[in-house]
Amino acid sequence: MFRPLTLFNRNRSLPAASGDAGDPFFRLQNEMNRLFDEAFAGFSGFASGGTVGALTPRVDLKETGDALEAFFELPGVDEKDLDVEISDNILTVRGEKRAERSEREDGSGYHFVERSYGSFARSIALPAEIEQDRVKAEFSNGVLKLWLPKNAEARNRTRKIAISGPSDKRR
Image 1 (cartoon, one colour):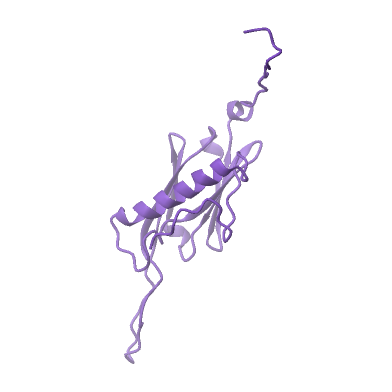
Image 2 (spheres, rainbow, N blue to C red):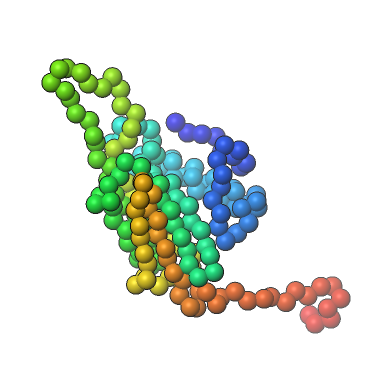
């Protein structure tokens, strides 16, 4: 049910972000986020036919010079069962994966069910202010793609910092 905390996961690539994906602290943060997501996913108030956390959608968040791009993995979910909103720079994706089970008249049925069904929600604090009126969403092949353009202030927020050394006499 729970996997041990592994700082260097060789079986799964880590998502790229504005930080260095090779940085061990970045990896630690990602792994801790995943651990907490899985640990508390079962307390959301719905019953799942599979394992705890199975209805927590996986997401990749990528930052470019002028936008953030989010990719949510939502296999088996219909577009009409999704809701996306942004409030106070928090991106939230909610939805429901509906059960597809049916019993046949001939008495045949399922021996066991491992697929998960039910409601889910995933919220992410966005690392930059965005222009909410220009956000675009596309859903195809079980992947929700969001394009979240940064506002002008967030795009121009990078600045160089002068570094002084021991030979610098200004103290």
